Image (tube, rainbow, N blue to C red; front, side):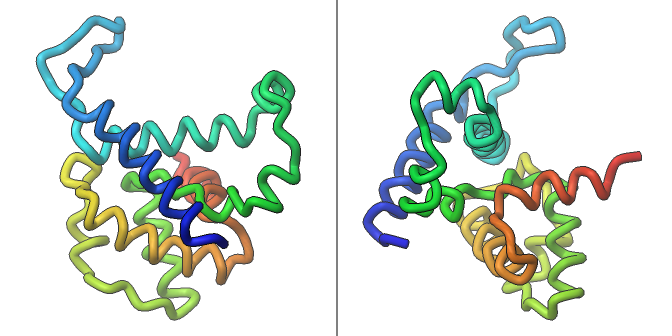
Length: 152
């Protein structure tokens, strides 16, 4: 992957996350609330949006994306794992299975989306990248794997 393009994508994610952060949340009836969107929730939403774009054929047709846009430019490798309790639990299990070292146990043990910071996110995304390589997939696909494994 091209480091310059990687940084451009990270900058885009950071910009979108920061635009969403601190906006007023919405209740189940889509009415504004007094609570503000935390950084972790904003980042998860942005990553879910990116995943939706990748998985949506209508968007591909509408904006004339091709598979080469993702394979030649290695976009799939840049997409992050949307972090939540399911994905972090899955990362922990995969780290044990694939003998991948977690840099700080507190990243897993004390995880909450509300407390997710840019620093913690970067560390968890680095772990997710190692896990994805061990599983021979992309980080973004781990979300579906972990969510399905945690369904009641």
